[in-house]
Image 1 (tube, rainbow, N blue to C red):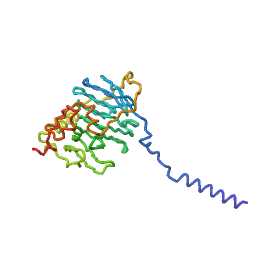
Image 2: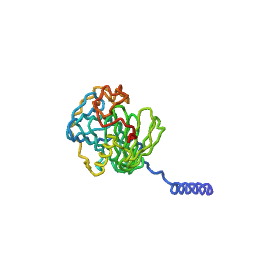
Image 3: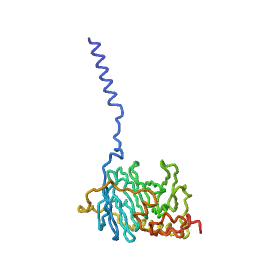
Image 4: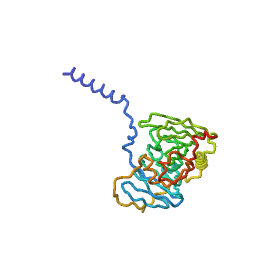
Length: 300
């Protein structure tokens, strides 16, 4: 009896030692899909901005400050411009006239924690100011018809022409560009470089700012990025307006489709394509962001 009791006592002691000395599992950040949805602030700087709230088919003209979140679309006419402010650390998007973007995802725990921002730019021009992502699992992604960009913290501009050409200019930091689904082509674009991608064509090699020549899109993106870099943007997040008009849902959420017809239906803009052999893609578009007809500035 004594031996049996002594054996059981030893077993209990050994188990206690194992429990105390065995490393306890660390509590990891919650998966991105489990993070709460967040709201951003759309601050209109020039009238001509509309919001299509998630689940509706009615565009709403807005001014001042409005709250937006995942599933909402934002578009500007030929005079409208706005800032889409994500966090009070200065992480934001400057939206230029004649642009249309869709918020695919905005989740997280805040600017200093884990978050995921996913935007589709259907047509137009935006400038991005992204502070360094503190959590290595955070994501900041801009998608276009011909490219997907991922960043860790940088200043960069993106332009999508009516012909669905994407021009990426990096003023600070670096941007990883990918193509294909799943991504099969990876390109790193560093500060001081730019690249252009087209439908059904692989990336070209990144070119320096000096190789932009007279390309009006690249020059405009360089200048706009320099303005962001010099602090020409609001760096504080106002509170969303509590009385932002949001009509009751009347239809399924409207998201962008990557076809020339779909993108032109909501963008009456002309990016300055010049003499274009692909005239069919511009039937519904009078938009000029200065696309020019040169390819990656090779004319000069």
